[in-house]
Amino acid sequence: MKAAVLGSPIAHSLSPVLHRAAYAELGLTGWSYQAIECSEAGLPGLLAGCDGGWAGLSLTMPLKRAVLPLLGQVEPLAAEVGAANTVTFDGGAMTGHNTDVPGMIAALAEAGVPAAEVSGPGRALILGGGATACSALASLRGLGAAEAKVAVRDQARAADLLAAATRLGMRVRLIPFGEYPGRGWRLLISTVPAGAADIYLKRILRTTSAPWAVLDVVYHPWPTPLAAAARQAGAITVSGFELLLHQAGPQVELMTGKPAPIAAMRAAGLAELARRTAR
Image (cartoon, rainbow, N blue to C red; front, top):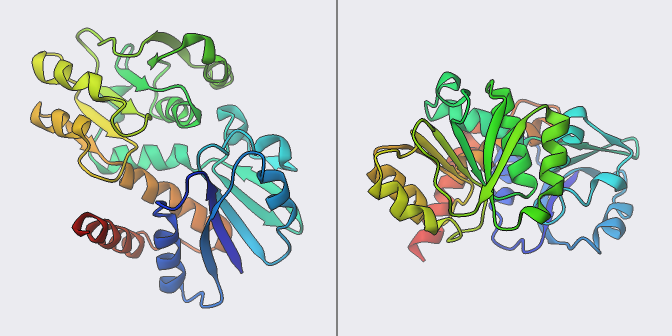
């Protein structure tokens, strides 16, 4: 059986390492997983070419929203979020799933971030307004939150985020990117590319109202400047690798029907990150 991760750019993706490690641990010797460069324009044709030999696809930027109208079915969570990071094939039918949400919840829980600390009013700030930010909103809902602040550069381009918030039943307050919350907040989730969140570094280090925990979706290089500043301020930091790992686990289960061997996947992923760092 075949599987792959699609996106653009995709050469850096760690997903093949994680999924191949899972297949090896599960004894799925006939399975393969590759990284395929794919733009929004190329997605319909690629999906049309997936025959019965395909088990599923992982999706990353910029395809998580673009895939939805191309699918026969969309699971409720993916529909609420407005983004699918996983496609499965069953008898020719394509179904979209979102494993980013349970992956983010699991990563925060594993790091020791209790839901009670981050679910109160005004306690969470999300950086960015893309598909992963929408998954972050759903994750906060899963932790018991009803609202969040979201920092975006252009509020006129936040329509998809606000629509997702409405479907999720979440209240969102948009703030200018770079604005720093007052006292009482607990969790910062950065969904922006490496370096884009650096405007928050000095604010975290020079204020007494640093976040209690920071999750940065970037996983290499690690720690990011944002994570390093948060650590210096005494915050719990959660890396993008943990998010990637915990969203890949459910993908493996959806595609193979077998429990994901998280320990083997983590070991393989960390070994690859160490190899890349040593280059």
